[in-house]
Length: 162
Ligand SMILES: [Zn+2]
Ligand SMILES: [Zn+2]
Image (cartoon, rainbow, N blue to C red; front, side, top):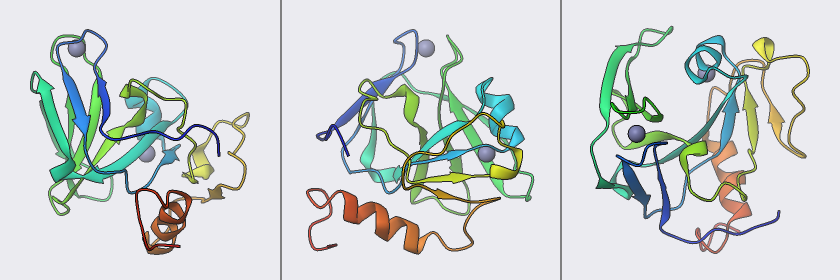
């Protein structure tokens, strides 16, 4: 592990109309290589960073939501800047306590090292996993063990988890 971030984390969209801060440490960091994430990012994968909804605060601007259903039928929303179109985070109606921030919108991305890779079955063949990261054909059915592993990497933010 290299750089250690400090709270609050700060970030925003490409044009600056939206600025946010995150006051609680992320619960996980993983990539998703599903074809939806490829389409929506216009790239090879999404870098997802779930955080507690109560820890996300908009300093400037308000994102706009695109409400739709996921392939599994869940009611989800993608939140983006209506000026520049940057996707900032996703939310899920059935799980209101967390939001899934697109980690590339953080100001400081140097410390971002995913702990897992999801949807390896549709990953681009040249993508290499991060050292020590779990690789899943789809995703884990239970996020608990993965989240515990993540917390153990960041004892300064999760005291007592070691
Ligand atoms: Zn913008
Ligand atoms: Zn995906």
